[in-house]
Amino acid sequence: MVQQIIAIKLINSNGLELQVSNFGATIISLMVPDKNKELINVVIGLESAEDYIKPIYLEKGLYLGSSVGRYAGRISRGCFKINDEVYPIHHENGVHLHGGKIGLDKKYWEVVSLNEGRNPQVTLSCFSEHLEEGYPGNLKTFVTYQLSEDNEVKITYKAKSDAETHVNLTNHSYFNLDGKGTILDHKLLINSPYYLEVNEQLIPSGELINSLNTRFDRNKMSLLGRRDFKGFDDTFVFGDERLKALLMSPKKGIQMEVYTNQPAGVVYTPVKLPDLTYKNGVSYSKFSAICFETQNFPDAPNNKIFPTSILKPGEEYINETTFQFSVI
Image 1 (spheres, rainbow, N blue to C red):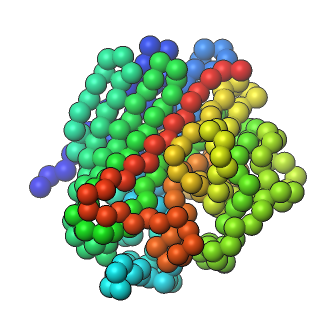
Image 2 (cartoon, one colour):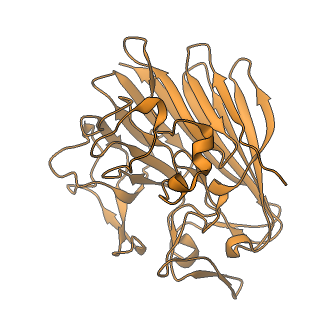
């Protein structure tokens, strides 16, 4: 079956513009008006939709804007157990990452529906067969991207399986509200009282550590690149507040609020991006972006004290995350 790249563009009445590809149900670009009413691409993407299937990009393992699954984040031991049956999964040195060798980010999704009117939205679907990448159950996944008139980007993942399985989906967009350079001068807030302790392989130990007065304490708005910032690839456990995170660019005046029904977010700030052909020939410097991977806890399949990631037949998995943009 010949697979074809399809790029879909959604635009709301305020000029907010989202471009999505069917390969990996990937966000390619997101144009947001700044304080001078100039459109800024606030997510890091490649020059064309076709660039995402090229080996020079895929071998980097960046997941730029991708829909990640069946299980976002890390799973330890190279396997998990459901009802006393062990399921081996793809791993490197015992670590399974972002759904395996060919996860949902590397599959062609089907465009199910497209509405380009008010509050435009597109829905894509993907099928993962029983034991694909080691996961039990035939899994049908849907993602809907919607733009509201309040300049919200709403991302909704839904999934159903015909057998008990583990599911944990997320979008892996890299945000830079200046559209280039670094994010070290952005301001950041994360409503998170705890973070997950991890080992050298970034596998959680099962301990939730109080973030108060640590470098993970981002409960008050502060400079992202403050003195104790060393970069993040860490799981922040969200508090009860409706607002989960906030990112702001003093330079462009763009503010992004993050809302989700998920219990945690993996916050990732790569030190340096590889040399690739990025959208509009833009260049990025040290600490050029931040990811808010809203999801369940990493390694929940092998950690009984974490929120369960089991999806049973007849149930529906739902991950709802909203990125709301405003100008200050």
